[in-house]
Length: 196
Length: 196
DNA sequence: TTATAAAATGAACGAATATTCGTTTATTTT
DNA sequence: AAAATAAACGAATATTCGTTCATTTTATAA
Image 1 (cartoon, chains in turn purple, cyan, yellow, blue):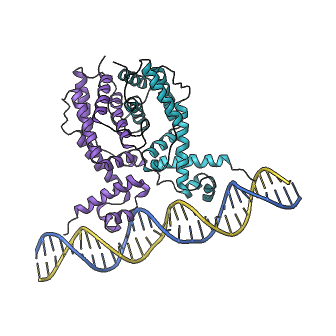
Image 2: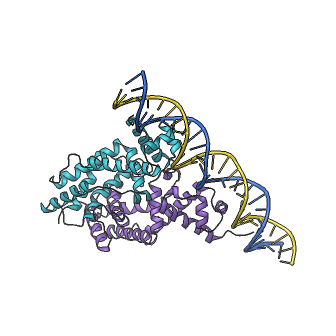
Image 3: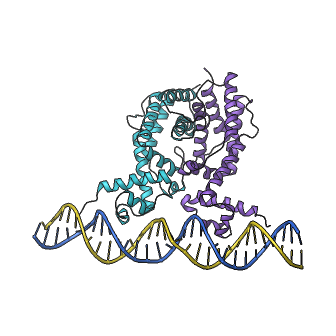
C-alpha cells in the first residue's frame, strides 16, 4: 500500500495560495495549478475531493494556524496590557512570516466563499472571552460590549497592517509599519479602553 | 445616430455587482450577466471594452460615489469631533443604503484586481489632510502619524461594520450595529485621539 | 521476490468561457 | 420619407474549464 506524498500535498497547497494571491480565485485553474506543482491535474483529486474542497481546506488550515499562533504564550490570566500586546505581536509575526497565507486568508474572508465554509474557533473564542472578563473584573478594562472591545483592539491593528501591505497607502505612499508606530498605536488603544 | 440606453448600462452594472457579491468574481460570466440584465451578451461589449474593463469601471464608480458621500456636508474647518462623527454617519448611511455596492467594493479591494485599477482620491485626501492638520493646530487632536490616526479613527469603525454585515460574528451571533454602539465606540476613539 | 493496493498519470469528456462577426433593428438627421 | 448610423442581437469561434477514467507506475507487505 503506497503512501501519499506529503510534499506533494504541501506543493499543491502552497502553489494554490500563491496563484490566488497573484491572480485571484479566477486565476486558479486545476490544470495551471498542476503544472505549477509539477504533477498531473488528476493527482490533485487524490488529495482533495474537488476545487471547492481544496479552497475550503486551504482556508481552514490557515485559519487554524493563524489563531493558534495568536494564542502562543497567551493566557487569559495575563494582565490586559500584556495579553493584548502579546496578541498583536503574535499576529504581526505570522503576517510577516507568511504574507501569502495571510493575503489568501483576507481574500477568502472577504469573498462569498466564506459563507460555504464553516469555521471552528471555540478554543480561541473561549480564551478571549475569559481574558476580557478577567480584565474587567480586575478593573483594567472598561465594561463594554465585546464588539466594541474587539473593534478598537483589533480593528486598528488590522488597519495598520493593511497600510503596511498595500503599496498605495491611503495617506502615505511609503508607509512602513515600524515597532515604534505599532507601540504608539497600541498605547492609544489602551488609553481608549481603560475604565473612566 | 441612435443613443445608448442608460437603463441598460445601469442594469448591467447592478446585476454584475449582485452576481459578484453572491458568487464571487468566478460567478460573473458575460453570458449569465447578459441573461440577468435581459440583453444579449454581445451588447455588453458596446458599453464596456471587455470583462476586465467592466470590473474596473464598477470599482471606480463605487469608489468615487463612496468618497463623495463620505464628504457630504464635510468641511476641513469643522471641529475634530463634529467632522469625524459626520464622516462615520455618512459612511454608515452609504453602507446601509447600498450594501451590495459596499460588499462589492470590499471584495474588490481585497482582491489582486485592485493592483490593476488605479484610483484617484486627491480631492478626498486633500480634505482629510487639512482636517487633521487644523484639528492638531487647534489642539483638539494629538500630534501623530497620519496612519495612526487613520487606523484608530476608521479601522475601528470598519471593524464594527464588518461585525454588522457578517452573519457569523466573532463574538456574538446576533450582533446589531445600533446608534448606541456606534456612539459609544466613537467616544472611545475620541478619547484615544485626544492630546495628553 | 512476488503480490497487491493505492498513487500517479495522460488522454478524453462535455460544459462553460470571453469575445467576434455578420446581420437586423431602432432612432435620429436630412 | 429616405438615408445614415450605431445599438442590439444570435450564432459561432476557439479555448479553457473541472472532472473522470482506464492504465501504468511505485512503494510496501507478504
